[in-house]
Image (tube, rainbow, N blue to C red):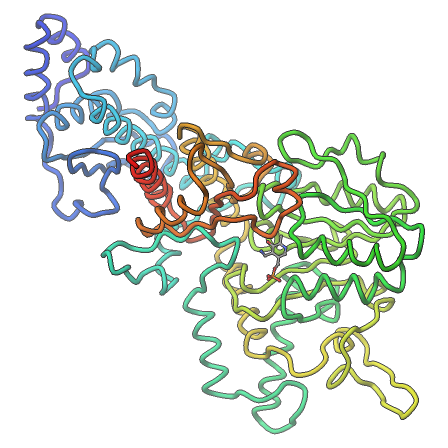
Length: 574
Ligand code: PMP
């Protein structure tokens, strides 16, 4: 029989210190049996010296369902601590658990006198696991506010992002073959570099295979059966992407090799025609090089001035200072939807509104925002938007350039030949209408078709659900990371960021850290993340970045924290 908390308090009060320690050893005797099938790696509590498995039996799916904590360990003292946790938490709802002051219980029982600092860490690990289970329950039953403490303002103002069905990350993960294969260490991969490239679900891999095996041909060339089928699939993908972005027509969707080329196409094809000496180009210091250098070079070439919107100290666009840099000479505002280093989600709608008043053309680098946040090119009134397939669970080598019809009309192609041609004469040539005008040569046909499948997968899974899931994991990761001694996390709070967290830990070079994380099968990126001006601005040369996607789980964050702890111990020992 498990004792109640009051009974434990009473017994403790009557015992001297030595007997209290002995009592702690016996307290776990009454623990209910832990199911053998529950002794999995997923249920293991990381950070404990001994083996500990912990699950919650929640009677019901409603928010008010009471929790029963079931856990086991090979150590008697830990079983005693489990009994205290169970007595404290059992019968409480998720919300009550999150609000409960467990430290007061530990204090009243003088636990610090009875357990070693390592055991205290293990106890903290168990408490964290219970809190995480409580948070996940709230997310699952739709009452996720305590986890999604910070929805981005862009999300707050959007009715389509309210009442979102929760995501089951384990189900999602199972759809990604690469994440189901174990590393040689026997552990599953913990992939935390989706901002560089996301993994692909089975359906995307299958689609590429289907095209290659069943009907591959060049697009817009043959009218034989394969040719017709490939055109249908290729244009079908374009239509899917148009719907995904809420574009007025598939003709506004241009396939490109990726974000970098897309932005270069706009800077050269549109910029050279419309940016003149004395004009200004506005951007930010948080841009990826792909959305910085093309504009810098255009400004140099055209005799224009490159200006930067000041940032707030926490790495957001300082809207109060926008008027100091945005004016009637601003021809282009080139800005990222979400920073690939700071994680900052920029207030695009507000920026476009203010740019409109100045007649400024707005180019949004959606490489990080499109895969993680619902995008509506009409509601946001975007002139241009670009993104890459490989960050949206799709293939490499393909991306998208969206342009308003009038902007595509006034943009020149920069690559000539093939399907983009209308007529070629000896003295001059003319072009097809968009999107063909910008799709010279043989396109990445298979990849473009599979990108449509990736977009369908995102739509079926629910981008709003993916966003909510990533926000809850970001909250958790930020909370846990903030406890690491000597850590500096760059960028704003969760309310203003997406699932990208970049940091430095005192005394650890990011490259060393990344190598040690990899030893624990945690893939994280280090370096300048193609944001050198931002790194210089922050006074650092390199950082470590973790970035999340639909398939990441609470256990991935736990594994990250364990790996960081391992790195700290390893580097401190040296
Ligand atoms: N912009 C941002 C914000 C990015 O994160 C990236 C990729 N890291 C790019 C542009 C470039 O994308 P790609 O390499 O697919 O052209």
